Image 1 (cartoon, rainbow, N blue to C red):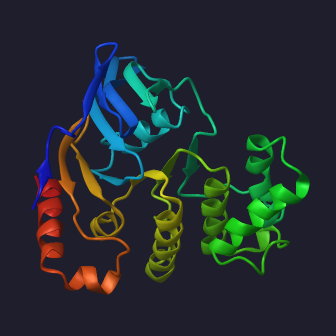
Image 2 (cartoon, helix red, strand yellow):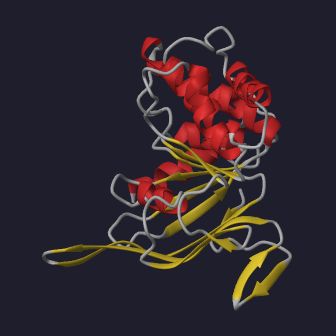
Length: 276
């Protein structure tokens, strides 16, 4: 089993004293997050370094409170960085942007709008020069991909929780981001719906190959979806504790993975990390 602890990759080049590779999409360098409190500074993340490659799917696990969501919100540009640097294709982020799409645990749809209109909100902002028909075609394409081809004109308030999350997935892919950020998108769903949406997500991702970073508490989900699983140490002052390469070939069959000998080695490694 291949374990990486220092994110070593070939073709390393240096720019402004920062090492990265020509294949790096998302680069976190010496990241730090501090919240001031009446009793002094509370350091959530410190000395956090991570490089994520183009077209890579990375899952992140760790105990509650270790700063996973904080890190993801910083990548999204929704939470200011205390120190360090986050860059996409070597360009430092300066706030939210269409190069990063986010799928939250709750899709936060506009309940009075239709599924099509909800997806259109982002598409209209990202493709302002496109014709109305072109924008509608983009929205309908991704809604169809998540299994909502018969629900274009249903209001979000009429949809089940699982269907709303399908809209959230379509909305994120439709703006064609460079990086897809997923914050426990299936955490509130029942196990059957969760499995269905994992399959929907990975089917679209296999076609689009957008660099993806997903937070999850589910070890099996982390293994099934990822090229690498990043394990974070417990907070405060959390950082990357270990990284596990998942070497199953794509496209993946859930049944084939569960029956593979390496599956249980991967699973044991992750559980052992979480239990220490």
